[in-house]
Image 1 (cartoon, rainbow, N blue to C red):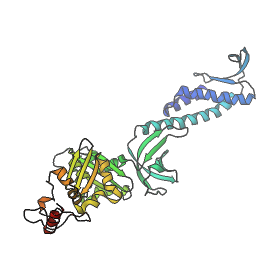
Image 2 (image 1 turned 120 degrees about the horizontal axis):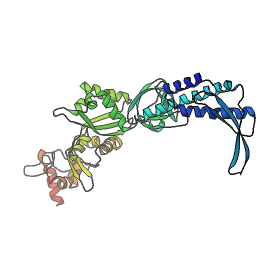
Image 3 (image 1 turned 90 degrees about the vertical axis):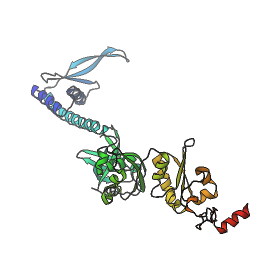
Length: 380
């Protein structure tokens, strides 16, 4: 191997950011394997490459004594005359391998620093185990089945956004793992659509997701007078609609964050209207009383609204209708009788057998209507 070839190898190593020493050592190892096969010998071979001249020497390691644990070898020079022909083939293999490894290392270093970022890619293939997403030429990511919302199906060349959650080194290529279910994907999507979030004026305080179904985000503003919910929703709902479209129709509730737990819990149960929230720091429980006609809305289908509100706020939430609260004495216990929509509205406080509060007006000087005042007197 000529000095000119050595110079070419060094230049290539610089261009591809490959360790020159490691590349030459690999070339020596590759040539040693090649010549052991050529010599058809039971003895191992070693190869040295002069770092200046490029001259190659092949040695057969012949055992000449020692012990089984520590044998002694004599290196006999068996360099063939046509060494350059084999060296060129081996060098090509080693260079190709070194370039691939260098590129894999560069990809790993680039994306290992981007865990938590969102990416945009195109679907290459999809099966029951995972979906392969092309991020850019030569870089692909895995979207495992467990990180896919249950309502989503992917087609070839479909564009989608995902969140990088892990980057691993593997024997072939760096494994970039992405998610479509992670709560932080929602944050990244809003950053893309809402300039106020990207600029730090509006802050997403917390996120709760049931991927593919419904999500809630709590937002606050660092700028007095700026409505954080309005900023996120956008004119005629344009901004939130873009996020919903990217998440294939996932419903999103944007609610104002508050440092007051009771207010925050009440906001989190949106779109239900809340009459009163009383929090217990000891049990970290928020007792919520809602108008009778808001109970099912506050709880949500299969408890979804209440469940997401609890995730969003971090509080255990116990929801009662106004009628339930009055009939069990809970209204008096948690409010001291001062409950909006209770005595203050002039209605009878009695609760019917169906759990609905009576809609009749209370008699003057009484908390009951004529019918229920008599029933209350009979019970006493």
